[in-house]
Length: 366
Image (cartoon, rainbow, N blue to C red; front, side, top):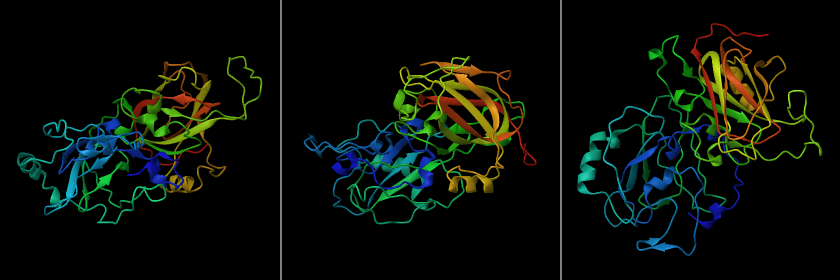
């Protein structure tokens, strides 16, 4: 970890880095066990915000660091921790770790954690050399090929040292076999398998936050774009009081399950002076092959893929939950993907698509 982490990132992130961070404390991820927390506790790994570096700050245990840092090992073995992924599950609870800085795991904690047999778990990323925490080398990305559903991750570091943040990008996996055809579900929720696949701008907050758990804690917990500079110098509105601008921002999501949408919620909670003037929502059915191609093209997709209007242009208000029922929704057929467009710019905290899960037997084109 170094002061370079405070600087603007220049390395291009892989596409999967816009998926849901399933280990984040913001979605319920938590540390169950760590062999050592001497300089900085393992819980810091799961923070949403970027790590800080404070050159002159020290604790009684040494240099203050905003990450997980263990002492320099002088005994056999290596350091490791176990993380329970977020997206709520009915999993056995282990005792709270409490305040840990300056400590190592006790014999009792080791005995308890051995019941998970984590030393026999499947290897997702083999032992790999990491680079030091300078700007040009601090971020390491690894592609995981496994398609299996996982609930816990064991992070091993060899033999000791520090990591600032640990993110596990992926898609929540719901057991839809237990859901009835008439059960109303939030089909876009990350807990149900919804995922962001592309966006036009994420200057202040990523659109994946829109489908996170609960209501947003603050503006940073939502999606916010930069202020567009292509707006006219003097704004005008139409008969519906919607500001007339040529530009807009968008985010595209794959639903956790194909379905028919019956209710929509758009929440501008916390966005009081920077909420969008209006929004609209389009939908479509895409096959996995078409989705992959669209992602490669950054959603500059072929003209024969025509989005269908789900919710027409609608005026929004600040710091408010907006609810739309079936009489406001213009599309009542199975969809797999949605495009959420805001105009001209601004921030939204949450997006909910309530509907009935359905399977589609064939593609539906206009």
